Length: 101
Image (cartoon, rainbow, N blue to C red; front, side):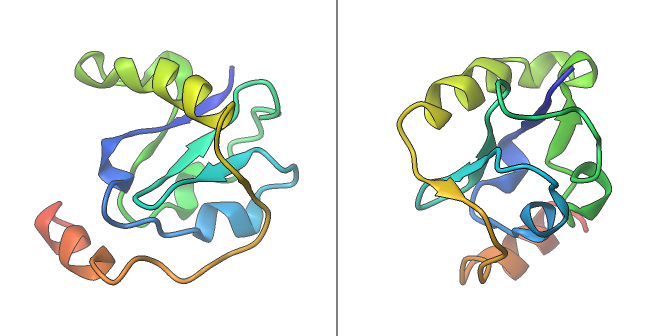
């Protein structure tokens, strides 16, 4: 069961998750990260590293966020691969506070 990045990542793009991932399954756009379900090995290393709790196992995604399962799959097909930690977005700390973390 692959992991999924959900809406909490929007405006943050913290990449602590990428740093611990043993495979190259993360992709990025200008606003957030996505996990390629075909590359994810379901190890779960990424989930506890996300400072805004944006990552879920696909079977544990809250009902109101289920659309993100398909969004991750679709976005990964068109976006560049991210293989190392990068700086978060300038809005990341404000977004983290807004989300209550």
